Length: 298
Image (cartoon, rainbow, N blue to C red; front, side):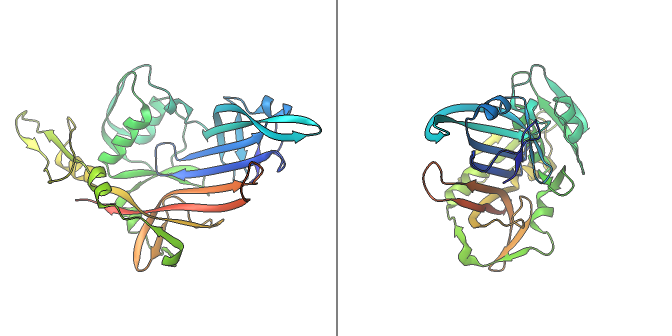
């Protein structure tokens, strides 16, 4: 995995112990976790606020660095190690609680990101009926709820290097999915998990007395103010993990892409590219791991 520092130098293969690059359908869709030898140069460059650049052009901002001890020795000197977490550049403000309330009506999602201090390039957008993020709240949670009300997710386009907003219905009904053999998938079966995840949401009509929404037996119930029947129906649509597939590096397993297994179509909910030299124990690994999901709307 090629990773470049702020000073344009590449992190050498001898110092890069492990890396996990993760793409997900969430408000901050790209994250990177690194473990490296704590050389003098890397200790100076891998600090919070500095940037990393991947070979595919994705720029990330370092948000956390933790030093720890290991048994590595280089040039007769015992080295420690650094664990680093970085997120796609421009989204760092979304990781801190808000200092002021942001309340917007009939607003584009891209405008919500800007109002929260984030800088993201949107290739497609949607209108949000009402967005509320109060002072002291986490912006990512508020954005995730706003997306769920529209039955939508964030997909990062690695080719055009931008955010796209995709409806869940559109994702699960994509044309030309990639075919995989079912023997490559570790299937998950947990009906109680589906019941826990799929919540019955209720609200109050504008008249202040009628209850909107339906309650299904055996599922959680939650109340959300100021939503209509359309948004309540959207809140029912969720992506539930059904299986996990691990392959040698596979660019087709990108978050948001469709795959076909045993005649059933799934969408990649999360994809993680893992590089591990084995220097800290265990075998060397270069692989792609993807979590496959389909839609539940009952």
